[in-house]
Image 1: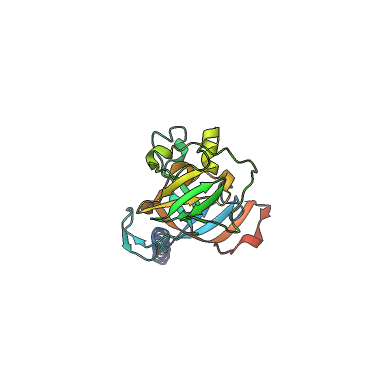
Image 2: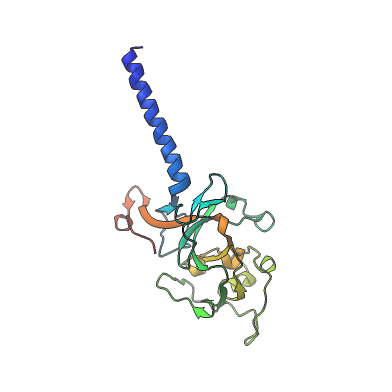
Length: 239
């Protein structure tokens, strides 16, 4: 082979390797792409939206570990976060496909907050959470599992959050009602904006701080197929 071609080939290979290394560094430390597969965050996020998630926003981590080397911000109420689903081998036996799967939800309660749900209304530290992004698609409200006027109860999270799905009256009551619960240190209570159609902290409990991978920042692409690109959503910042 011509020495000039060898030199050109070497340059191309070196450039490709540098590009791959840079891409891996960016994905590990700075930003990661995430595609919305379900409607649990409607109307904020549509199925087919593709997001850029800032991994640096909550701190620089040691690769392949949960250890934060350089802390930046802590997750705040209202943040849209991407995290690894808290898979439980026993409670999720019928959902093996959720192991090592990333979810996207909104932070509702931070460590030390009390969270309560009464007839679909979410109260954090005794105050109703009212925001334009909250959506309810069902008018029905399950009966309160606790009698009216019942005093606040202390709930053991491990006993309460049983990972049930919306298939029984008992499970649906958890969609609409939840006794006052305090978010533990290092944990977060997260919910979908589409409150009636979201599998979230009401059913499977708190999100570990170490499981949170980053903050969703912007929609960089959105479509339902090659013939339906949602141009108006591209570049939209997330709040």
